Length: 336
Image (cartoon, rainbow, N blue to C red):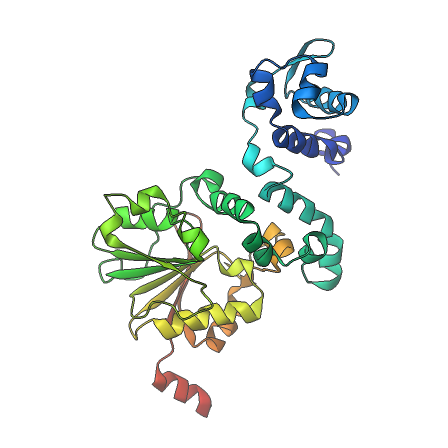
């Protein structure tokens, strides 16, 4: 039996208005307009090009939630909460709005197991980003430090980093994680692989004077052949965006590019068999999934990889290391 203090607050759980009011305020740049002197609701509605009464209702709701102040009827002021609204990630017309609207497809996803993003926006997720470069740029920022904070300082590899001379960050976005790893391991040369538009926005820290000589940029799809012969291929938060067939294709490209002693490290998209299941926006927008280690072992084998290690690291991340299956091991497997 739950104590009264432990019972869920249904009013709070069912308050669907607040997040959308926050998104509308961010999209209309209301904190900036108010900071610029548009305090009266009539003046503010003109500046924001909105219906006065509807905007008044939105602001009034946010005042009750502690966002904005109303020192007098119809007059609004910003506070710290309002100033922290992120225009880019809450913008209904940007990547934040894309992801927010996608939650409305949850029922169809549960019924079919397939993303319904295309039914909302007219194209599958990755194609949608390709034709909307501004939204794609916001997505890149969301995946980088601006959206997810400073990346892990390091990844623990079996045998350490000393044998690693060249690493490929596959689907590494604008290179935030790669920059972190190269700073930590100054003997390593890094290759960043992502789509041309994303690589063009590579993190300044990655291409600056300190790291620039140790970095090569490859603007390409990771479904195309990858730079060959590196010691390490890193897949961080990549496989969780793709269903099984695409996951096998990405892993196969890594296996084919890695030399016999190379390895593939995967962060994201894999969990221990006894880990609790959870729902992520990547499932709804792109049909991705998080595989158990048992499921992933089968996918890896189909891609020509064996699992070398799988463990939770000091960072709290579950990291899986793979290595290409040798010709002898493959032959042995075929004779069983």
